[in-house]
Image 1 (cartoon, rainbow, N blue to C red):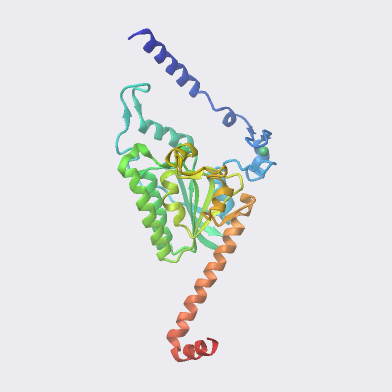
Image 2: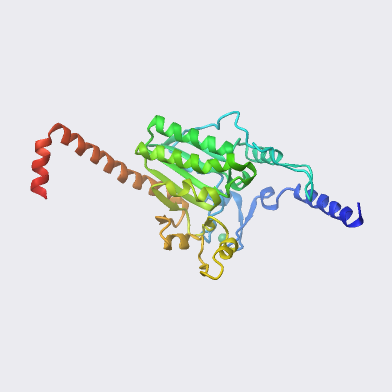
Length: 323
Ligand SMILES: [Zn+2]
């Protein structure tokens, strides 16, 4: 071992020691706003749905999100057992991080969040409408979507169909498909699309809520399968398949990347989302209103069809006089 390698190894060890220290903001009762730079007291933010005075939306912990959406009690949909979250047993044997095992990282995420997967799934009532809500937790590896998350998503979808719930909501905050899990992880794109199709076949209105960054395979699969795409606030950004630099490289010399690329304003302008809310406090009301409109329409449609079956002559008369 020459002196350069020796110093490199010492450097890595020092870095690891610093990494083990508690992350500043998490260890204190104060949060620094990246938009207005104001320091806010966490209990005050809690009372204001984790929104700063300047309207910047901090990440809302999944449990608080579920508490704020559901009317009262809700039931957590546990992740299926015996799903290997690390099918490739990913390990780095040489280089800067020898002995690095991906499974250890997943275990760390599980310890931090108290969850088995990056998803929080629950069933309950929202404004008296029965609902299944799937919520990504960004603290679980930036909301990565791996094999265990695939199966958890499918379990929630199956339950929604089986119970014939009124609405389905997915709250996205995801870095995409977990690249450490290879093809098994990538299959999540297809599986989640199939699950969404099944929900739609059962005429359950679906709502996608973009809470923060959503990218990669998650953005390119189930995200756009929902009936409504709601951007939670104007400060949402990084709604994109790949980052600005990568996209600019692909489009080199052919197109200019707009300044609002991947932002709430940008995706509204390009027609990729339906609504951008002023604040997440409007979320429950907006979903309830939209769901009631759709569900009434569906009821009306089926009622009309029933009338046609019962009295086809009468229906013909009505249609001929009105046309
Ligand atoms: Zn602020």
